[in-house]
Each structure stands twice: as structure tokens, then as C-alpha cells.
Image (cartoon, rainbow, N blue to C red; front, top):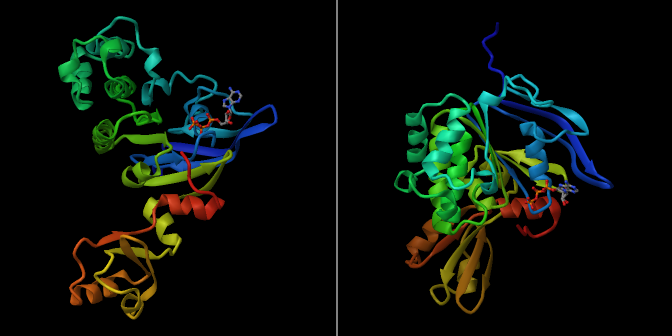
Length: 304
Ligand SMILES: Nc1ncnc2c1ncn2[C@@H]1O[C@H](COP(=O)(O)OP(=O)(O)OP(=O)(O)O)[C@@H](O)[C@H]1O
């Protein structure tokens, strides 16, 4: 034994077509144990199809998947206790309360009622324990479905767009839940079409479009790789465009009705020059994001 750990997820050149449409067109990636991995892309990119093949819920036309060294397809009973798959809200048992849903899922795996209650606590639903699932809000139902995926303490958790259709506050609450899951040492593989969210949560992301992975790395590395300028935005009138262009390190400066925007790849000296001129009031700094990476990769604006 070398002591090297098996990766949690290994995906090698998977493919899936629906008629002429190549929904997944040669996708490969590896996820380490404990990693938070995001599959990103616009609608129809092939994220769900990829995830379902990886989970063992859908058969690939070609390619291999192993989870913790085991193949998930055909249905692999050895893996079931070790993976958690977020169920769609429609998959709940009818008329049961949040606590009963979770206890029922848990009982399939021999999980104690206390563990089920702990999970309710983790997703912040303790005060809704006795509420019927169909009376929960959309965000609460999403959290319950995540709790159901976690109740048997799996090593890998798969979540398909867990934050879709949530209001901003519910999304942020769910981010805390996802971070708490990762802090428990779980491997998380999730899909989202929110690039800003993935940038905050994920250790690494794969950007998908039209069935293929276009780029894969830590979000910060992808953004840095663009070598895009930082934009420093000042209130109009605090500095003239000519004066801004005269500052060492400024590449360009544009004005509109309300602001003056300076482009620079050397933000530190530019900011200190602006500080010396006393023009920091109301200043905003905008760096490139994963949306810029998507634009760079595809030539198209990102539309979720
Ligand atoms: N069962 C199916 N039969 C035919 N076409 C399908 C089927 N499932 C998915 N597709 C098509 O395959 C492509 C990829 O779909 P998929 O659901 O994997 O994308 P996605 O990235 O998850 O999109 P979304 O963000 O909208 O869920 C889409 O064009 C979709 O219409």
C-alpha cells in the first residue's frame, strides 16, 4: 500500500446522445475527497445529464465512472450507503411532516431518530419539524431535500441546482448549509447556473457548454488566467479623465453620466495614487469574474 487515497469521483470520457443531440460529449474530471466541486453552465449545457450518469441514475453511451473506486452503474448496492443524492421536492412522501420525512428516509438505512433530528438542525429546520412538507416554503423544501440526501451520513453528496429558484436570502442560508456539510469532511459535487455563487463556494469548477467542459480549475485561477484589467470606478467629477490617464499604471479611463471608470492591471499603485489625490470617496473596485471567463471561452455573454 502506498497510502495514497482513492479519489472520491473519477469520470473518464463519458458521452450521452439523445438522437442527434450530444448532451454530454466526452466529459472527464476527478474530484478529491473533501473537495467542493461545481459543474457550471447555462441551461442545456449538459450538467444534469452528467450528474445523473455520475450518480448511477442514467446509463452513459460510453465512458467510465468510479465513485470511491466502485462503478455506480449498474446499480451498485455497495455504494448506496456511501453516496447521497438530493431528491427533487416532488419525491417526498405525501402528508408527512419534515421530521417524519427525514426519519422515514433515515429508517431505510437504519439511522436513529436522533440523527434525523440532528440533520434537521443542520439545515435549520428544527422549528419546522412538525410542519407538513407541502406547507414548507420553496427554500425550506430544498433544505429538507438536502437533509434527506445527508441523513445516512454519506461520503459523497450530489446536489443538482440546490439553490435554483430561491430568493437571495434563502440562497445565502443554503450556502451556510453547504459549507457546514463540507466542514464535516464530505465531498460535494453540485451543479449550478449561478457563476457568482460557484466562485464563492467551490474549490474547483468545471465550466460546461454544449456537452463539453471548456475549462476546469479553482475559480480564482480561472479568473487570474484571463489577465483581465481591474476596473476602479469613481464618482464623476472627483477627477478628470485626463488626470486619471496620467496616473502611472492606468491603461484607460472612460466617463459616463455618473462615473469615471479606470482600467488597470496594477491596482495597488493606482489606488495609492488616487488616495494621495483624496479621491477615494465612494470608490468601487471591480475585478473580473467567472462570467468574464465564460465570455472569453465562448465569445458569448453568460445567460443562465
Ligand atoms: N431525456 C431526454 N431526452 C431528450 N433530450 C434530453 C433529455 N434529457 C436532456 N436532454 C437534452 O440534453 C441537453 C442537456 O440537458 P441537461 O438537462 O443535462 O442540461 P443542464 O445543463 O442540466 O440544463 P438545466 O440547467 O436547464 O437543467 C439539453 O439540450 C436537453 O434538452
